[in-house]
Image (cartoon, rainbow, N blue to C red; front, top):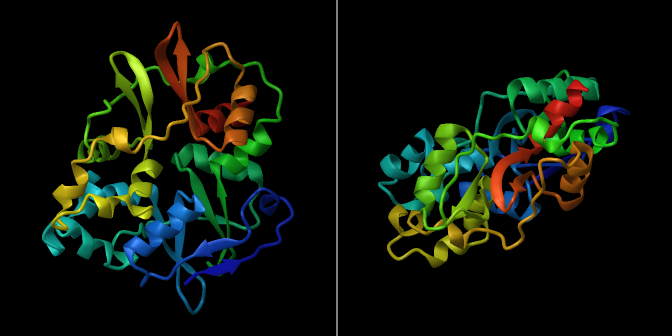
Length: 286
């Protein structure tokens, strides 16, 4: 079950998604994850079926939390005694975030960019004065506008240099805990000082949503599926950039390829990472 909602704000909604898919709080966790995976969403609003007022949101981060990264794993370990299948069939209200950050449909694009930077969030539901869901706007939507603004910054000016990394043989449980503890959406995967790939929250969520998780299940216990090495989840395509590349070019490349981050390579070594958030922050300050 889902709804499509529309909004007609001429500025904000010119870049935001107006036809927003939302789900009711009674949908199963698995159903919500499957929908996010198949639609390529990192976040999914949860709305009241009668009023379409937003009551929560489930994100790829919530899914990681549920799969072992944080306190939402209690749903698996305590309520369902480690049975992942039973937990996945529980309702999405059990893992959705109810501390909502929303923005009014009358907001300006610059307001949204400021909020995304200040709150360090990847996307914000748009509501009217009655709290009814009217759309959603993301970092990538903002980047589509900002990448056209001339600037003189290079990747080295804004990239993250202090990197946390993992290895191809690290298991999913280790990676989810690391991501949740450090509040990362992705980790570079390094093998013998060479970048093997990047594992993202979306990769881990797709492991569930694409049904791969069920191929690993023997008993249905969480240990069956969380001991899988992250090398099994990594997409074969790896795009990189260099420290001297302009951020306008990098922003356009990310938008064009639909990716959220690029490893920064210098002399065949990983020296940093640049993300959509880094670009929105830098370009909004220009």
